[in-house]
Image (cartoon, rainbow over all chains, first blue to last red; front, side, top):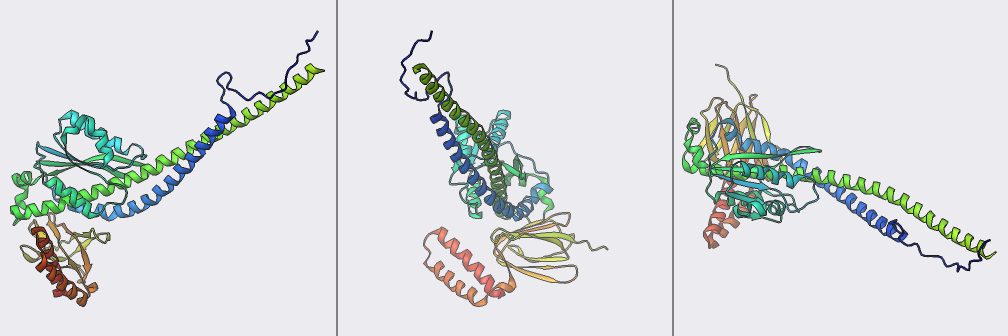
Length: 284
Length: 136
């Protein structure tokens, strides 16, 4: 015996039952992920273009950089105790592990032997090192990374470095290996005092303090320039890869969400139909 | 006595051109300690370059001349030479008239410079253009 149930055939709005997302929610999510995919895809293309340019600029910079450090590589100069660390990063993120790798290397060195002097190039490194090594900052540079570095930028950094006393200057940056890999590297540069103290320098004829100081200044600027270029190249390639991954992940999410959306849509329609039909049945 | 040649790396930042990296017979450089020539087995030294001409003679006898604005030169015990110039250009590319005009402009800048830094910068310009005019 069926109860004649009077039921109004109002279509119930799909409500969140049992934690299942409503159609509206999925729709909003789908739209936002599609936007994200567009953004990451265009960021990837921009990075790819910048990377191509950075790699081209890196070639001569490498020739120049290795030439500049030839004096230090061909002769064994002792690194002094008093170290000044120059961290080369940039202001912009979304580039994978580039900045955090640098931070890790510096923190490890600090744990091994406390560092008292640092010069930071780029806001990202500054943010990473602020908490633990904030009191060691002698100078920080920002506005780094928007445009490719010029030699003048390297000169400014070198001038700042030379205005502080130190036995050795360690430049920490990410060396570019290839499109998919880079590595954080530390390049030690002995200071004038340590060079003069070393016998090897006397093999070089006619070298006095004046010449050595001038040489050191120019060489440091060159080495800094080379390091900045390597860092730029590493960063752009890392950003390119990160954005590529992000785009791919976004694509996968969109596929999953689209399936969920269609399932939910069909479920809603089916539910409405059931209600209508059962309502109609009840009226008969 | 075997003549051993060595590498010279001559490169520059400004134009981004890649270094000229090869083997040479003799390299002449203008330095603060005088204009001297470097042959294989030259005594190791480091030198600061003045504005002037670096001329590179290959083993075959061809001579390449470059005007450099400043830089450093390093000669190692193994007969390799690294010459790093701040700005570089082929001597053939120097336009005498443009160089003279620039020299006049920089001289007047030197005369009107007030602070020590400005004077030093203007003096450097004058030196470079004087060097260029001498070569053009």
